[in-house]
Image (cartoon, rainbow, N blue to C red):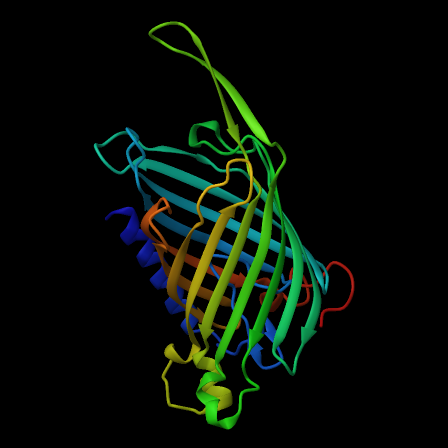
Length: 325
């Protein structure tokens, strides 16, 4: 049995266990609106959450004499509320890189560690809206050199927002289950450039190259349709479990270098589906390029996500200080 089918079976087993549990939602609400944890970009909530694991596999195009790569990433992310409105997080990932053409040995190792902090500064229950501000820190030189992590750190201050459309009139009631979330940030490298010196094996001459590290605009967006919201607050159309807890969605993730040589806009669009119960969420999305400049050819991402504040509301899921709302 190959690795893909092993992961698929594991995800199916977790799905079956989740379906057998209490499916009443209790996490990530603004009014009646439940905002799920999205896979391609972070959601706007501050919460106690554990993604274990998130697994993705993507094939990239080759450049020049370099073959394309199949990159498999297995990661774990944990966030913890310090107060009801402020939380911190840590993330770790394991990479497996394998040439996609012409054979070649796979290389595996740890990617750079990441840390984050997020503060929720706005929430309107009636308008089903929420906004937060956060900073992500990709910790340079913390990964294994053999998989090529950046030797410099990148800090990304980001604005997060979410909005549900439950206020729409009766004539548009079937659009009330729609929600959008978005992120807007700028990646700021700790080093403007990196200079390396190599020796030409034929001539023995030293060759110096300089790679410039631009500031990068990062934009994320999701469009969601909650079947649970449809059933509970618009019309019970008789969907059976597990369909009644599913959220079809499309995510878009874009990056645009802003200076130091710049470059084209790249990114992916990710159609997929989520299933959310009271204590956990399961999700799977395709990974597709938005244009020919994007190195990714195609791929997929899947995640098992635990709501720690609902699993352990009186212990691990409580804020360190303050009272949970």
